[in-house]
Each structure stands twice: as structure tokens, then as C-alpha cells.
Image (cartoon, rainbow, N blue to C red; front, side, top):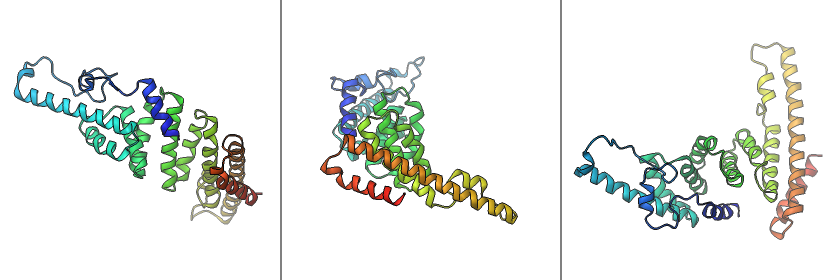
Length: 263
């Protein structure tokens, strides 16, 4: 549902360069950064513009611009595999701008190529802070979900946290639900929390240090369980308020069961 909203927003904001405008190839090759996903530099001081090699390059760029237009069409139609097939070679040739690399990361996410999606999202998200909040929240969500799918819960946790202030209220239950599990897995995984890593004793430590490390580990585990409970409570509250539908009944029942186990 979130992605469909994003695609609609992209069309309204006009963020797809040359969208629905005849001659997108000319726009994409205009060299203007606001219209161009890629703009190979040309040495304008040379007179090679009339050479056969230049004309060949010009023809290649026009073909690539047309390929970019098809890729964006596939993206808007949620045909992520087809979009991926076209965008990846373009990115290798030109290194697309951050917005288009985010689109590429979305395609990789839907293809379950989580490691590659993470690499791109982590690279471009710092450069996309000027985007509309809801679009940015979607990218944070997909980046977090990719880490979650790879069981890297400590890396997923702050990304869900960044999503929360900028997503819509009816989307927050999903983030709190995932955050609950991130904290719960941290509580159950030895060495997962930062306090355990800092206070954990080395092999050369004395018995008193080991005892201290064990005590702090226990306290950290209890703190993570407390945070998990708080997140599940916020998630349940959100589902009941915004999405108390038949489709969510199983999720709501699961959260109640989780809360019962965390008492």
C-alpha cells in the first residue's frame, strides 16, 4: 500500500524527469542536473562534435535516455524486475543520481536482493534528506526491512526509528511491531546490546570483573525486554486505532500474545 502511494506522489511532484512529456530523450540528454539522471562530461573546447565517434556516442546517449524512460515506466507500473534489468546497466555506465539509485534499491528490495538494496540505500539516504517526508520514510522502511530480513536487527533498529517521525500515523504500528522484535532479539542474544559489548569481560579479566559483566548483561537484557514491551504496546494501540480490520486480526492477536509473555 505504501509503495502505491509513493508512485502516485512521484507523478504529482513531477520528480520523474521528463515524465509524460514527448521527447524525454532530449530532456534526459540536456545536461541539466535537474532533468538528467546521468550527464557524461563533454570537452566543449574540442571540435570533435562533428566526428563519427561523437555522433556514435550521441546516438548511444539517446538510446540510453530512451531506456531510462522505459525503466521509469516500469517502476511506476510496479514492474520491478523489468525496471531493474534496465536501470542496473545504466547505473554501471553513468552512476545514476541519488534519486534514481534509490529507485534501483527499491527494485532490489522487491527482488529479495537485500544485501545490494542495503548497499544502495545506505549510500544514497544521506543525500536524499530534502525529499518529501513520506517518500523518505518509505526508503528508511525498506532499508530497515532489508537488515531485518538478514537478521541484522541492531542495524535495522535505528532505521525504523528514523522512519517513525516522518511516516503516516497508520504506518507507525508496523514500525513499532518490528522494533519490538529488534529489542526482543537483542535481549535474547548474548553480546547483542551495546552495554554487554562494553562491559563484557576479557579472558584475562578477574572473577570479580566477570561477575560484574554478568550482572550488567542481565540488567541490559531486562531493559531490552522492557523496550520490546513498550514497542509492542504502541504497535497494538496503533493497529486498534487505525487498522482494526479483518486482515490485521492475526497480527493483533500475535501482539497480544507477545505482551502476555513479556509481563
